[in-house]
Image 1 (cartoon, helix red, strand yellow):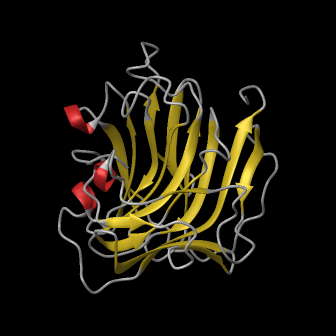
Image 2 (cartoon, rainbow, N blue to C red; image 1 turned 45 degrees about the vertical axis):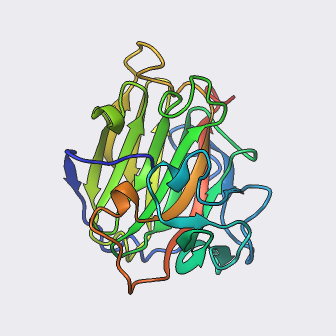
Length: 281
């Protein structure tokens, strides 16, 4: 999320039926040895489950105003207009309305303080918002910041999307050695022209040796452990999950923010976390 993506390869996938299927059955054990350890199927209407989710709240000030990206939204807490469960889906919704010194409201849900993981398969099935200025993200940060602040302790972007590039899905990592601040960031993108109109399953498989990215089980990027130092690979610690819808900012707002598209929503069908027994901690 703390990133500007440029110069990446683009992988093309088309799957017009992906968004029409109903919610898949929860598998306790997968064929490749992963065991379900945590999930949210969003089955109870109302506020998100407080046993599973916390909130980042406000505009990032005074420490990282604009959440480090000059974003335009104020994140609310326990407000149904911005984060709610309805009809089996989590809805994170951005509104054009003034809050504090911001012109938009939205929500950023985090599992910090509730759940975190080290080496896992993370699956999130979601449908994305549309329009210039939208910037949804599903991503992870270090729980304990063992190697220092951002980017030293790492960031894993499972899925990012910006409204002015409606057909592209981005997956990236950020570390001390690889980050946009020094123009060494690494990642890739995949072409999905229907990501705003249908549900896709965004997945990473994270092990001690590499992280793989998938959309609907189509692999499009790998980041490998070079087995050097934490500067290259800080991903040997526990990370928590974040889901948010930002407005504008250094990347999301590159081509401006449309005035007539609000509200916009990120819809999440489910979150499922799997671990292999040999690596579970």
